Picture 1 (cartoon, one colour):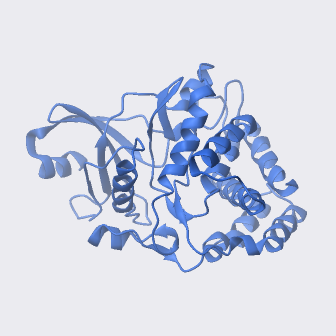
Picture 2: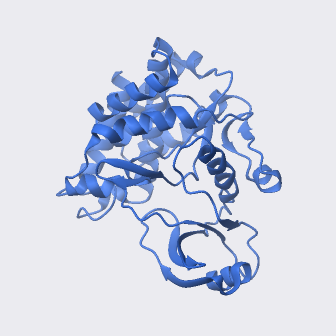
Length: 323
C-alpha cells in the first residue's frame, strides 16, 4: 500500500523502497527519490494522528532559524481506502543517533552539550497562540501553527491525575507517591500561569539527535512538539540523561538566550521534569519496557535490562519531588 501511495505521488522518481529499522512508534522505510536517499515514516494508530502536518510546518520554521532539522519533502494524512495510514517523506541523514555513540562509549559531550543548549534557545523563537499540541487541522489547511489549549496550566494538568492513578494501579507508584506529586504541583501552581509559550520539541533525547561522537547533525522526530514552557526541553534532557551534561546544556541555553536563570526558571524546570518523567513512566509501564531483557532496546544501556530502567525512572521521579 505504501509503494502504491508513493508511486501515485512521485511516479517512477521513487525507487528502492525497503523496510527500515526504527524502534519508535512509527513503521519506517528507506527509498530513493530522484536518486537521493529518503526516509519514510508511517502512522497507522487507531487515533488517526495527523501530526505530520504540524511537523511539516514546525520544521520549516525551525530550519529558517538555522537549526539543522529534516524538512518535510512530502506527507499525506488523508487516510484513503487505498492508503489507510498517514505517511511522511524526509531526507535521509547518514548519521547515527547520539544514543548509539553513547552506548559505544565514544560520545564526547564537550561540543555536543553546548550545541544542544544553543539549538533549544534558537528554536524557542518560534511562537504561536495557545498552549500544548498544535491543531493538525489548521496546519493541514493553512500551514498555520495554533495550539489547542487556552492556558498552559490546563495543558500541564491534562490527564495528570489519570496518569498518576495508572502508575499506582500498576504497582509502579505508591499512594504516598501520588499524594506527593499532587502536593508538589499544587504548591507551585503559580508557575504554570504562563502568558505565552515557546516551541518545545517535547521528545528531546539522545536517540532523537543525529550526529558524530563530537558534533550534532540533525534534530529529528518533531511529532510531539508543543507550545509550552521555556525550561521544558531542558528538563527532558535531564529526564533522559546525565545531570552533569544537563548542566552544560542549561548553561549554553541561558548564554544563548542572553539572560541568567531566575527562581521561576528553577521551579518550572523541576515541574516540567516531573510531568515529563511521569508521562514517560506511563508509556514505559504500558508498553512493557520494564520487563524487557537484554540491552538491544534503545532505552536500555549496556549490561542492563528493564528492571534497571524501572529503577532509573523511579529515581528521576524522586529527584523532581525532592527538588
